Length: 318
Image 1 (cartoon, rainbow, N blue to C red):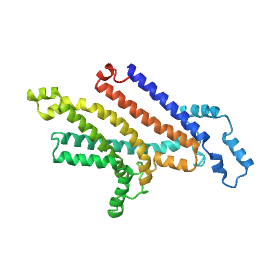
Image 2 (cartoon, one colour):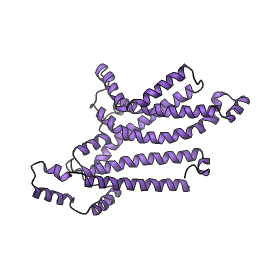
Image 3 (cartoon, rainbow, N blue to C red):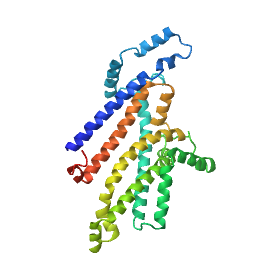
Image 4 (tube, rainbow, N blue to C red):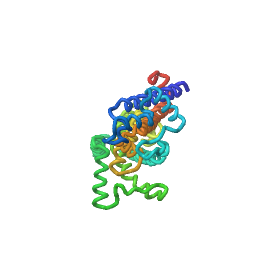
């Protein structure tokens, strides 16, 4: 219980530091939302009035305290570039799309990595093993956005089944919504699946060479029985840790994929906010993304401890 509490405290401190850094960086960066709203012909007097109305001329620590208080209360503020619309409504409109894309990507990652790893671990060094090694090497070295462009070319221009920008909201059609997310999720999943397969198969091969596995074989235990009852749990430990990093990569990588497929998620909203220098919206989105990443890594550490409590007892995890 103390370990879980430590991980939660660490996550809270990390999120606090992320919020401080985001606020400070966008407060000292050249240019501000007042200059963007005023345009290139705005006078210095008008620019000063706009900054006073927006509260940009006040002390930075006071502004951060007020922003943090509003953010924790569920009201991060008003967007400068979306005609005064509240940031919370913008996030709540885009966040379900990004979470659905990430969830579908993680589903593909688990299905691909588990099935390939378990079905090919029996014979090391064979033809199938070589094919999997080629797949993992190619998958790890291929960016997700490049796969997305390939999907658009082959299934969009050639087969007319993918049309970027022709997005169907889940409130209109669930299957249409799933169809719009299928190829983007697959583009995110393939490189991450290759990475997870590499770690999981390596752990499976290492466990199969252990002495306790030889003992189980000498007692007449079958291969899949050994995998299910002995090997898989121990082999999952490093894979779960990698999975936590993959979840962070899924949420960060989806920003580019959303742009490639023109999906109206958090990534697209963040790019629009950066283009218009909408600093309150950028700060809120950065903290939201950091929250999802930190929570994913924290849950991965907790799952590793639950799978094998001996790790914490031995002092390997502090």
